[in-house]
Amino acid sequence: MHQLVERRLRRTGWQANIVAYAGYGAPGWARVLCRVLLGRPDTRQRGRLDKVRGWRSFTTLPAKHVKVTIEAGGVTHEAQADRSGFVDTVVEGDFTPGWSSVRLSVADAEPAEALVRILDPEVRFGILSDIDDTVMVTALPRPLLAAWNTFVLDEHARAAVPGMAVLYERLATAHPGAPVFYLSTGAWNVAPTLTRFLSRHLYPAGPLLLTDWGPTADRWFRSGREHKRATLARLAREFPEVRWLLIGDDGQHDQEIYREFAAAHPENVAGVAIRRLSPTQSVLAGSLPAPAGQSSSGPVGQKWLSAPDGAGLWKLLRDAGLV
Image 1 (cartoon, rainbow, N blue to C red):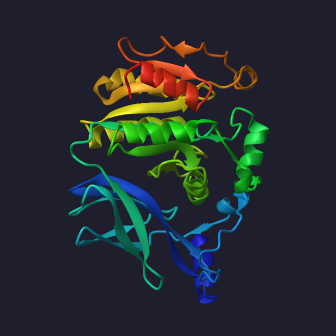
Image 2: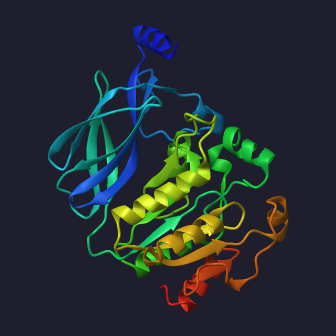
Image 3: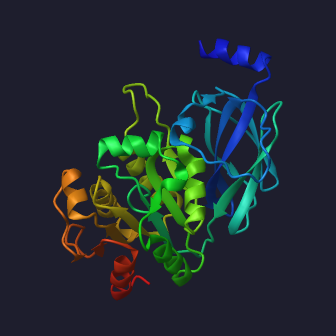
């Protein structure tokens, strides 16, 4: 059915278009992330920042199994999009530490540039942050408001968590060259919205590590918790020398996931900083409010800190010697 719809759309002028996401890597390799969608040629004025309502992000039509050409670090590679139009692949190439780019192209469409954050081999500290209710107020513990925020609310009406952007900028300054990664259970459909939000609120630029919200072989929707667990384990394999400061909130499962990762990979955890929700938010989330200050919920010998905002976390991180 999908193939029939795709053929008819292509006859009426629709074509495959590449949505490039920021990837990451090291001097000899890069993980390239993008999605191929069907759509009309983009005739909007360049440079115009449109207001996008969340539900529109979920009305896209993927181009299945399209061949994507990747020019990276002086080498040309080929990859194939999956049934949801996603490409998540590792390519070899000669990359310089810092921000680099790769060129992505598909037949009969304009090529796109995807940024990649290349970690210096000498880097030993990284920042990995949750998004929902950690950097952006989304009220995810409250299902009805979460649906409203995701599918209806104008992206410009979303609010940043107080002090978190300043905290991340201070951390990046205190640790030159440290990467900032944003790990979320959110769908790739909202990546452009999240990227604009982070930029507008002056968060440090960094790759988004999101997930495909569609069905798997054994369930209707993918497990957000398993996505986070698998991504953390992958980062530990890819960057075994990096110790991560894991930042999240106590409204969902961040503490549980970070605790498991810290127990399995203690050498890859510098500390855990948890943004504490208000008592009302905590009750609505089905949990009790966490105590202030240093928490004993983590593995022995590791630094677990908790505060309601970025300013409080900065003070605790400074006192703990993590900055």
